[in-house]
Amino acid sequence: MLTGKQIVIGVTGGIAAYRAAELVRLFVKAGAQVHVVMTSAATEFVTPLTFQTLSGNPVHIDLFNLISEREIGHITLADRADVIVVAPCTANLVGKIASGLADNLLTTTIMATRAPVLLVPAMNSNMWDNPIYQSNQARLVEWGYHFVEPVSGLLACGWQGKGKMAEPEDVFEETVRLLAPADLAGETILMTAGPTREELDPVRYLSNYSSGKMGYALARAARRRGARVILVSGPTCLEPPGGVTFIKVTSAEQMRKAVLENLSQCSVVIKAAAVADYRPAERAMRKIKKGKQEQMQLNLVKNPDILAEIGKAKKGQLVVGFAAETHDLEAHALRKLESKDLDLIVANDVSRPQAGFEVDTNLVRLYYRNGESEQWPLMNKFEVADRLLDCVIRLRCSTPVQREEGQ
Ligand code: PMT
Image (cartoon, rainbow, N blue to C red; front, side, top):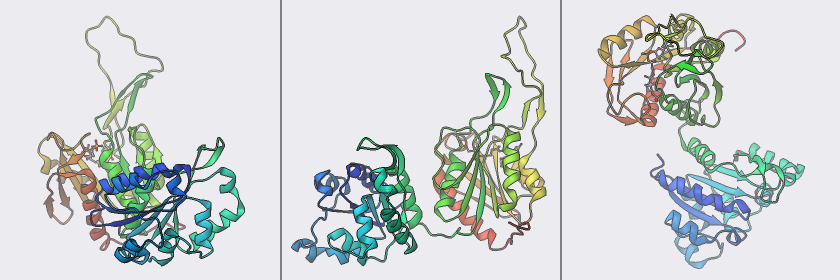
């Protein structure tokens, strides 16, 4: 995902310095070349050898190291970086950058770069609240520096409050977002993901095997590419991607309400959720007890077809559906494309072991309104998501959206 990207990671002197090691590992795993620059205070917390081992590259500390100056130097580091991430970032470093100070290798590199700079502060909660710090951060935001703000929790100093460094996974995600093309900026995309659960009694429900992986991959990819994302999700075990508006639902009725309420502010809708077509006609208030009878009949009633309703209610939105099929893939997919008035349908043959529900990969065939279709090879769901968003961009170029008054 980050193959070919050069990432400079600055580590400053705070107890959270050890968490930068995890961040380096995540970037290296994603294929990036990582160059670590430590302040001398940071070396009091973690040894440079840790970062050298994890990054596979020499660690830079001194501004006036003769070998570094000849072979790399702060200007070379600054030029080479696709992005600079400082994690953890002390109040001192934020203050220095805001004051234009360049008195060590890290501040000099930051001053000299044209790459985006992402600062990940971690500090005592009183320092965080200090108006001097806040005004320094606000100035940097104004100048185009990016931040992943600290979270609340028990701090190393024993205080409880805001100041704990954000999770390395969230910093990774934000960095990927900064590096991705912002080709979906300006779009608001409504995604649905996961299964719905249709309750039978307080302890039982009807549902399906959807894990939410496909829909969450789409939400993450769209967010990375600059879209505003509203993710309406049935119950899953997944963490919602950072930066998306997350609406958690359980039943098809709840999903319908959330989708229709948000439809008018969206330019694109992608429905990867596996919605139950039927629900129990009645939900028992108490647990249904086992009786003497050998058989039992359940009365089911039809759920609303949310996608078909969107097809009727849409005002210029581009609408993409998914079709989960076990047989006659093409015939079923084409019927759904037509009857739900979709622009595009992504059909997956869920009888294939590496496609559809629960697995990390998918094998899909796309059917367009103009009769065209494309078969894609087996891919990771993240790759499917990115490629599908490329199709959305192509289609959007020819589909103007009519927003409702006041939106
Ligand atoms: O979540 P994962 O484990 O990653 O699995 C991914 C997936 C298999 C769930 C996904 O790739 C997929 O195929 N999603 C659609 C599943 C589905 O419900 O297909 P369908 O053929 O039954 O429905 C067709 C379309 O109508 C879907 O976009 C569905 O969201 C929508 N629909 C269906 C019924 C209904 N009552 N309302 C709807 O909006």
